[in-house]
Image (cartoon, rainbow, N blue to C red; front, top):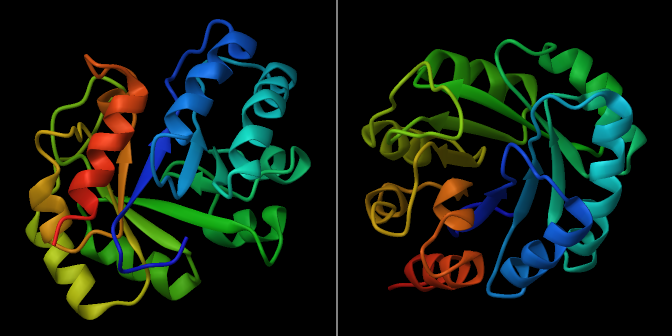
Length: 211
């Protein structure tokens, strides 16, 4: 997940009814353009069910060189062979997550719209900080609304990569790319795209490579 060239960061739908069938949709999306990362974010699953979901989704992503992160669960991320974890402010502290995931695992931290939280996460050693939500989103209840100026500020002053998240679509993402975000984290903007997920990934990549 190298910084400074904006790339796509996919987040799975919150509910995947039939993972073994849905993985075909995932593979088509991953084959449609450059994807840096896949975050597995699933609601309401017990540990066994979540581990089985990871076992289905992780291999095809990793085979394509896509880093796989598990949302909220550093312990399960390590046990299931993920490349890292994404933690929110209400999850375990960074230090505990690092202990659980090991020295080489990726750890990203939600920082909402807070410069202070982002600087704390960066100083602690986070591999990236995530700002948002930038737009209204139906995927997850967003407690804060971030302004694009936050991305300008971070990208000019810090080397730790930043991720923009929240309601991002092909239609509204250009200002975030211009502001210097390293990654666009997208869920509904890909999976609910009217022309299908693969078309969405291809469209995002065209925008991300515009000069």
